[in-house]
Length: 73
Image 1 (tube, helix red, strand yellow):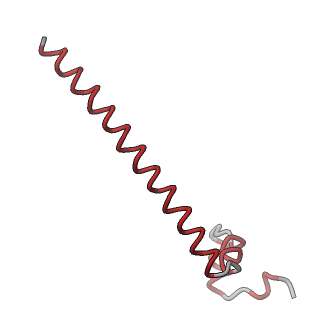
Image 2 (cartoon, rainbow, N blue to C red; image 1 turned 45 degrees about the horizontal axis):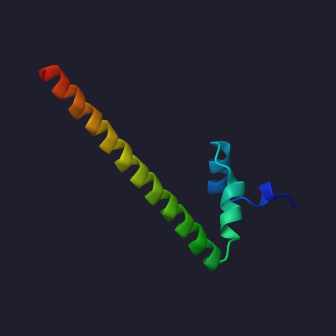
Image 3 (cartoon, rainbow, N blue to C red; image 1 turned 60 degrees about the horizontal axis):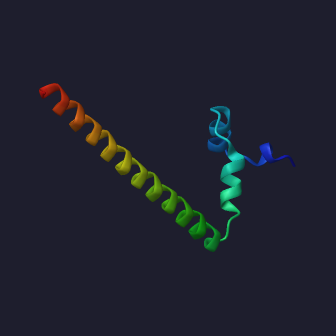
């Protein structure tokens, strides 16, 4: 029996709309420990992005302040 024959109507519809079911099946195969590890990795990545954004916005704000002070001069 092919995998497409095992699909529920909802999964068939999702697949027809371009949903990659291989990702779903892959993640369902993870153990709870693997899921937690992946979650922690993504959380760490999200925190790194947040810090980079804060650093960038700080630089942007500093440049903006410099430009404003130059215009006043």
